[in-house]
Image (cartoon, rainbow, N blue to C red):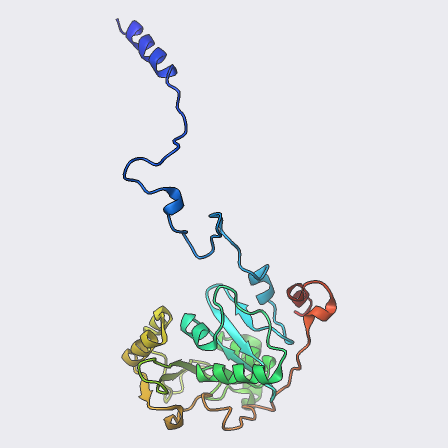
Length: 281
């Protein structure tokens, strides 16, 4: 008794022609009115890549001559190359830092500024954000190995105590420049544990990762104060153990002379300037 009924249902189903909808259902917005899903979508609705090709690849190189931005797995590092020598490094840079430095977070600069005065100005701004002024890239790499308990680096310090990181080299510093009080700043200066506890250092607070959640300098100021940061009316009032005022104090190096690295334009090697960066690793 079911066979004729099933056959009739199949016949009716097969006669239905499904055509694409030419207009959205009632009450539903048109797709053209839906805002882009991200800042990377272009006018056609397709994801748009960053302006700099192979962004992560080029920044993964250790470029002594000119690199500005390094992209690690989960952090951003900015480099400055002062005319006095050495390298100024701001680790774990976040959006407020990019705003302070007038950098585009959607297209981070690959290379340092060829103009020496402009590069020095950028270096001073990095120091105002709590960056570390290393004597050289080699010194920075060596202290980094100590931080991760590299056996060869540990043996080197045991053989020569003069290689041990200074207090400034062990520093973990975060700075906020709030908009509600022009000229004022909030500083949280701590130290990393390198070569074990010393007993008199001020270590990073337990929840220091909260600093990375601040979207503006004002929010960062609030977070730093909650974590024990100190407010100062001006940079002149600050006298702490950091590199914030190292430029004015004519810093000459922590464990040796500052090693100068002159700018070399990668474009002189042919092809796209950014493509040439891969030759210096």
